[in-house]
Image 1 (cartoon, one colour):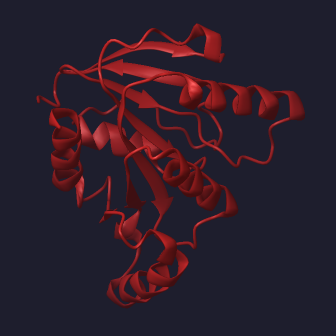
Image 2 (spheres, rainbow, N blue to C red):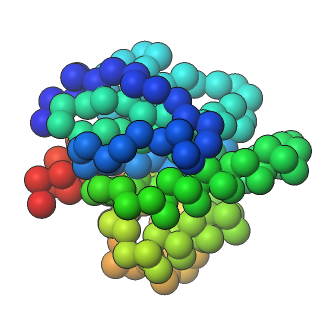
Length: 194
């Protein structure tokens, strides 16, 4: 699979707009401001494929990118407190609509900021993925922002925080240094070829 063959396809604001399933889908999920756009841009070696925003909660649509025989799906970030109730309802409908359609989800890359304990929303998402038996891995983002002793400390804490998911692959990732990018690419390729 070529990671340099990718184009933005479309954004969808409600689940009934979502396109029919034509190819396997690789899904990016995570809290607002966890670094989803930066991770995607690093994987595809593009500066502005996915828009990086300094404002959390900017992605409020499901964004589809057409890849080499695969769809890459960028889900709206969850957990952003400043959204009003109607926006939160629309977000919930969109997310549930996406996951409850009969989609060909090959892999969900669930992003968690390595510097902090997983949020309640992160844990809810992990639980949902486990219950629905959707294949997923955890990308621990922003690992470059920790020094060596902080990294060791967080690794130990994460073992406890994510003890229910010790069987799930966890990849430390940095969009700055590229740490973890090759491993994520391999997992994506393997998930599509299974």
